[in-house]
Image (cartoon, rainbow, N blue to C red; front, side, top):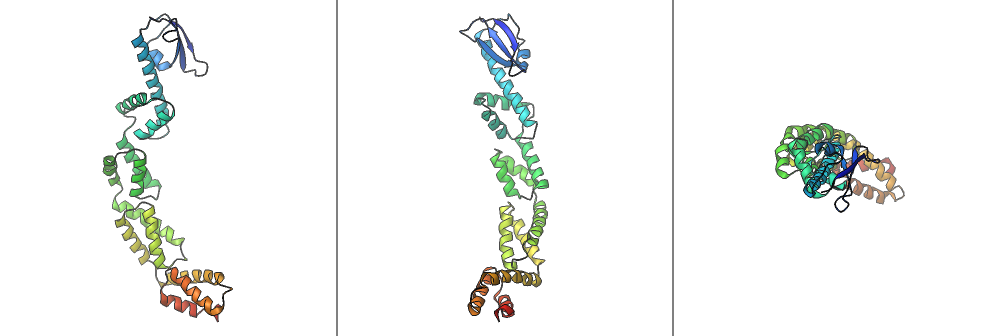
Length: 269
């Protein structure tokens, strides 16, 4: 059986140790971490059979993977898939990765249910995304559908409505040049893109537009009308009037409002 002839600190990795043996047909030298050295109580002159050596090499790989995972988890909570992907990217074989994950689960360092709950709570507090968008993000992180459905209940309809109202009011303030009709269409699309559910979207769109009156449309048509005047400035007056009407119609204004606006334009007289 091979005998350990030398144990020395690895020069490139001070936390690792180089173990040399007298039989080169087995292992001439292996490099293990300090935890493995202590665990197996390795010392100069110790004899090891093939099974012991294989166990030491395997356990050392698992320990190194475990240490890497702990370092990765120290920055933020991670899903099981994220940890697996990270270890695979670092070159650990799949059988080592699976063993590391089992040990992390046993110690409670990874738990997809806890991760999903924390992830949802953080997104509710810090982002303007709705539950559908959050579900998609959790799916990308490898969380199973049952866990997602159980935990997404944290994102209640009341929370959706509160967040969507705030988001909509800010959005509308930046869209002073849009007709109420176009606002309704684009507001729906925006909330849908942000991941809100239809029930919340319909209620918030209705509430938001209820607060807008005819004064909004009058201000909006003035903004759009000025754009149209610049765009068709070189077009003959009669043709320009028609083109401006078409332009405003595409912006969602009513025929009556467009007629009143265009007829009062001094630039067309």
